[in-house]
Amino acid sequence: MRRAVVATVVAVLAVSCGGGEPPVDDDFVGGKIEAGSPAKFESTLLALRGRPVVVNFWATWCEPCKEEMPRLVAAAKRYEGRIHFLGIDVQDDPDAAVDFVRRYRMPFPSLSDQRGEIRRKEGLLGLPVTQFYDAEGDLALEHNGELSSDELADGIADVLRKRARS
Figure 1 (cartoon, rainbow, N blue to C red):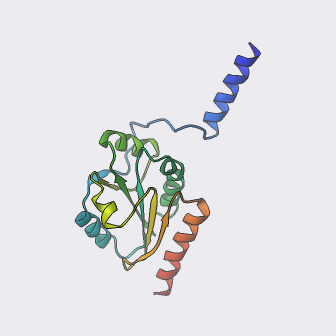
Figure 2: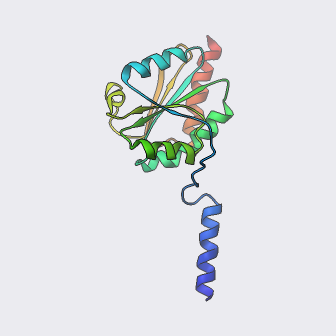
């Protein structure tokens, strides 16, 4: 009996302290996923000029993507109005991708790179990858692998500083 109670308490604490995946929120209205292509990616970056852009390449099957997404979501909310965020969902199941966007409450849009064409054009091998573009649309930094909070903050600070000097 005592073991069952301890196991239940541990499970409740793990979920309430951030362990496991957050529940899917069917009422969430936020980021959306559009069909993507290398041309669509380029035209989207062009349309976002004037502010820095953080582009995150992610997939539902990528464990490090799941770990870093809450940090990206928090940064997108914190820097709303100063920095654009854009996701690129790479070679994923469309329904799983929609659930991922809801689960993590992603407030920014994503392009679906169903066949990996954008990833290949960008020369990316693995996931996740995060690119930081300055306000003029130039790639300022590319980070391969899961971003820590500090690495994300440093990348954002770099592109914001460049904007301030312009």
